[in-house]
Length: 297
Image 1 (cartoon, rainbow, N blue to C red):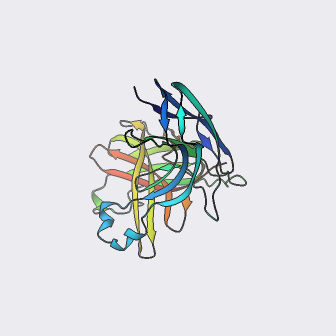
Image 2 (cartoon, helix red, strand yellow):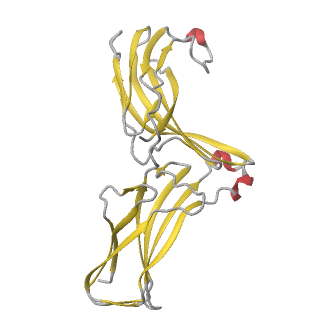
Image 3 (tube, rainbow, N blue to C red):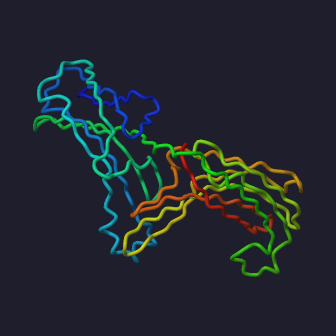
């Protein structure tokens, strides 16, 4: 067995804020003693922007602006060249999470076209004959909490054939009336989205009612913007032809990493929306869309 590198971060949830110190240990395990040319630890944070296939043709000019945006990049030498004994060696580290200049630590976010990721990378350089060892470990950055509570913005909605947009033949639609409300579209990311929905009447039988959370990612520069909406999660809140005038609760927890506080910068934007989707038995699909504003408290 050769030498094995591992990085252990002290905090179990791996969540840090700007200005805090990241602490942990690098563990080197090997049967025999290990000769090395130095061990270093690098902290990297970057925003990776990608273009969807439909935008690539239009935005050739984009290629220059879609290079990863470096947020943080610093390296420390942990151990000078030398020899480590056989067995298990733990090397403690402390790394301040600081940005240089006017850069901002955006919150960790794993999207489709926008990815904000922070990693620790440990490198053990070795002589020509032995392969260099590398180990990476992701840690999570949360943006600073916003000052003051967001003002609740409750939304009442009524869906009838007349309120629908993008309908080709309105006359062929079955009659229905759906009412409901969302308690607030200004949401705290650690609290669920709540509300309720009532099917007052519907001529056609209902097959299913779903709640769909959508991310809207915009990548761009002066030449133009590519805006893409993709589904994060879909929760069924009612199955089958529901009782009329029965309040159906709306409840959705925002998933970690796949959501972040609504973000708008010069090169990219990350926004969120929720769709209430009612599927009728004749395969008509009724969708009501609500933009959300997420924040962290």
